[in-house]
Image (cartoon, rainbow, N blue to C red; front, side, top):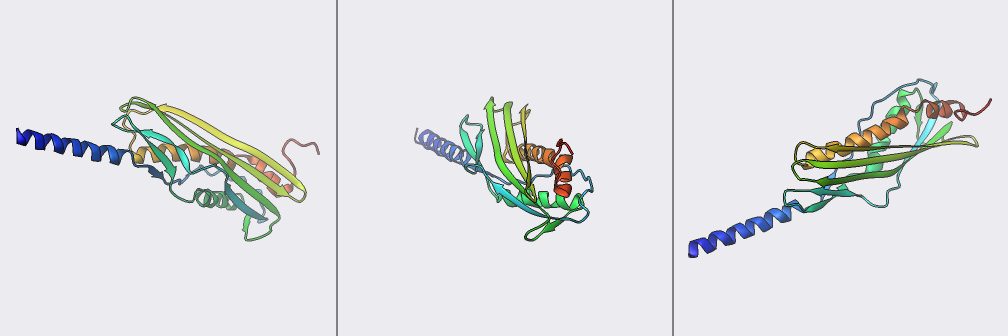
Length: 200
């Protein structure tokens, strides 16, 4: 009888420890890898780049685990710095020069949303992710702004491990950032100051 009580106590403690571990927040490292499309319009003109994280908090959402509980997901790095590295790379790829201070033009990128939501069964959860950016380009007294967003929803065939969550979120962030990088009108505005679609 005593052995059974000891065994039961051990199982309760182990279960409590497992539940405690599963409820720990996951820190997601944002490391986008967007497709880079080069239009080569810059002619070495200098562009000052600023990236601002405009999100209200670092919270992305909540993940499910095997206990059917939910644990928070938060960004675990400097998201603005991670995005800025890719924006500066795109500036160079489009034949501009990144300016250390004032430049011929200015590009400000605002990170407005990165969210995650898991629902459904633990073994086959439905995952919804969304990412949004806003670009504000300035040349002289003229401004061109555009927003870029993407929402993905998928049913995953495997449980949502920390690694899978990070991959899913970064894929969505990369796609939204790629939309901005692929905006030819943005790059041509930075090069010429002409707003896309404006009459000449």
